[in-house]
Structure formats: structure tokens, C-alpha cells
Image 1 (cartoon, rainbow, N blue to C red):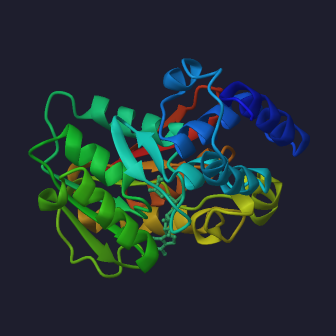
Image 2 (cartoon, helix red, strand yellow):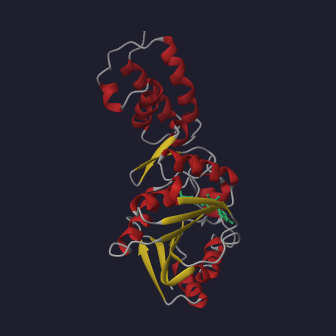
Image 3 (tube, rainbow, N blue to C red):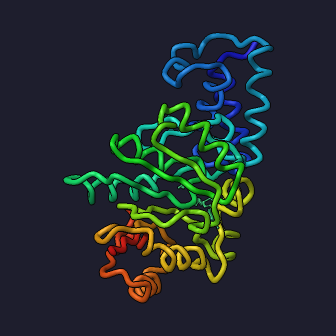
Length: 281
Ligand SMILES: C[S@@+](CC[C@H](N)C(=O)[O-])C[C@H]1O[C@@H](n2cnc3c(N)ncnc32)[C@H](O)[C@@H]1O
């Protein structure tokens, strides 16, 4: 009979052969998930022989990862800004860069918390729920054009006990939102060009919703629409906070100026690439 350690080693080799990055880590996380053990607990069981029934729970998960399905979809959850969120193919897997976007907004409002927040393209609900959690007085509206994503986001609002302060709405960006004065509009919209989308890892372009990744006009169409349409929905002094592609900032700053924003600020990610735009009304 094979032991836990032997299965970890075999799985690592198998995943490495399929071109999976960090194969040992992936093997441990998948096997841990199948056996309902934390990684550290697995280490204490290295010499334990595995029953056939246990192997049967591991195999399908490993097969899925070998086909490059993202680990988070297979284990069905991810952590975002201190929240444990359910993730599956209905929505994009929230990224560390997006946590940075949330951190910037938290810093901007450190002295005077926002009363109202609008999250455009909420996907799993990550940004909306993180801000609702961080600002306990804030009312949050979260929209998406995907019914499937909204269903997932609602499940996450329920599991994080934030349903009372986060309202979800089906909308093509701002089209279904009645004008009102939000303190913050935040969005991580699709911003990749078709070429950039094709160049993403198979995990991304093969499994995540295409409508969450790619935008027309070299990736800028959705950002442009959000910038153009947002001002009537922001109070004076309010901010539009955007995650963006890496070579769009000059254009976005010009668009913000012509939309009537008084000032824009551009910020980089940890790799030093332009990634976030803040436009102040
Ligand atoms: C990059 S994903 C971001 C998801 C989530 N906010 C996050 O950061 O993990 C973009 C989201 O925008 C949504 N979206 C795309 N076009 C839209 C539109 N016209 N109106 C509203 N949402 C849209 C997609 O369905 C997707 O959930």
C-alpha cells in the first residue's frame, strides 16, 4: 500500500510532467483537500498507508489539475483580504493585485470612512465584500452583467455574513443603477486585449470566464466606458478606483480629464508596472 508521502511524491512528478508550476505545493494542497487535512497535518501522516477509498478521492482532483484547471477552482475556495470566498467557474478567481487595489482605497479613506461604495463587475463579490467588511458603516452596491457571477457573489455574501449591507444587481456597468452620490466607485473590469488574453496561462484563458478577462479596443473599452459614465454617480470629492492593464495609463488619464474628473493618480503593482488609476471628482 502506498503511504501519504509516496502519493505526494508520485503526484508531484505527475504534475511536473504536465507542466504545472510548483508541483509539490499543488500536490500537497490537492491531497490535503481530498483527505480533509491541512498541509501541516499531512506532514504528520507521511508514513500512513492510504486506503483505496482515499486514493479514489485524490485521483479526480489530480486529473483536473493536470489539465491545468486552476487549483482554486478544484479546492473551491480562495482567500481575499482576510475573507474565505467560494470560487468556481462562474467567476474570475480574485487576484493579489486586486487586494492591492482594495488596500489603496482603504488608505485613501483612513480618516473618513466611505458611507457608500459601488463595485462594478463584482465577479465572486471579492471587492464589495472586502470593503463592506473593512468599513462596517458602509452600504455597498455590487453589479455584474453575469447572472452566474452574481449568484456566486450572493453565496459569498451569505457565508461572510455581509448580506445586509451588500446589494447585488444585474447591470451592464452603470446602466441599471439609478443616479446617486457614491463616495467610491471601484472596479476591476476586463482590461486585456485579445492578444494578451491568448498569451495568459492555460489556467486563465482555458478556464476563467472570457467575459471577465478581455475587453474590446485593445482592452480599454470597458475602462473607457466606466470612466465616461461614472461622474454623475460620484459625490464631489469622491473617487473612481480602477485596476487596469499595464500600458493604458496615459490614455486613461486623458479620458478621465475629458470626463470631468479634476485629478488622476496612477499607481504601480509590486512588479513596478502601472496597474491602478484613481480619478477624483
Ligand atoms: C476582471 S473580473 C473582476 C471580478 C472581481 N471584481 C475581482 O476583482 O475578482 C471583471 C468582471 O466584470 C464583469 N463584467 C464584464 N462586462 C460587464 C458589464 N458590461 N457590466 C457589468 N459587469 C461586467 C465580468 O462578468 C466579471 O465578473
